[in-house]
Image (cartoon, rainbow, N blue to C red; front, side, top):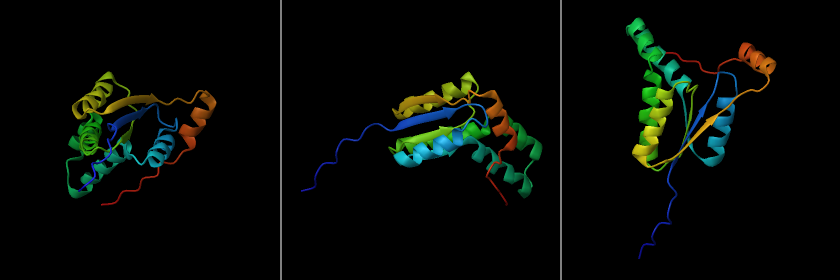
Length: 143
């Protein structure tokens, strides 16, 4: 006779927002890895979409779509798929607008996931400026 599976907690959607160079990627990746959660990064999605211009895509139209939230829309869909599978999701993005914050909350509601919003800040303006001007973004995409 098969043993029943132990009850699982609801999946969690954790959205880590904040200005560039505040440590969102560093913190988000580390915590997601430690918890065995999926990790989504809007910058990765948006930069990946830019590769399509190498395949003859209309660059102006693509830039317009990315500027108007295509990367976020892709991330919402991916997060929803992962949460529906019962996986925890950490999503990292600037998340500056009420519309994006509301959209993440809607993903959590549709999937009955726990929802947590975290905003990272760098409280030292000089350190933040230093990080923003000296960092390198690790993402090399080639078609």
